[in-house]
Length: 154
Image (cartoon, rainbow, N blue to C red; front, side, top):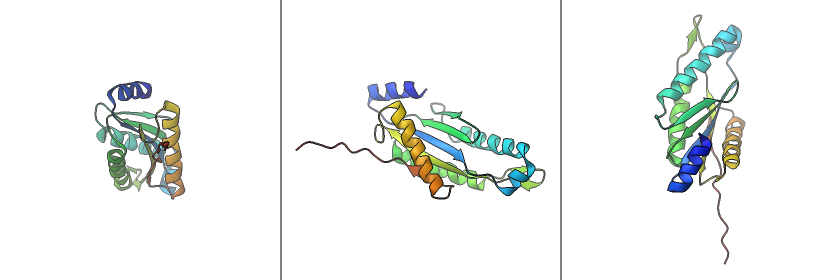
């Protein structure tokens, strides 16, 4: 889907965003309950991703606690705003299992085509680098990838 979006956006001269998402380290409540609690948190995040994306967007799970989200036709500023809203929803979302509030937070890195990257690998790398920055800030953050500036000749 990422390759398709790159091709489509390059042909139509439009932007889109790629977001790398990681669940922050689990709370003591999640660790105490174990695998069932981790599953409940993952299900909650998946539901929030579904309710916060449009039919033209795409989300996928990349690993144990990693997700990616493709926001079609959305620029960097709009993607940041939408992901900041999702981050706040995750932090406030009530997830209960065995009478314990499992609460969770996420960190996100947002990159966009063509502003931060114009190839598939560079775009994924930019989103992952921004995610690393969000984690360095202590988690529960949304970080933006750096915008590329073309050097002009004078």
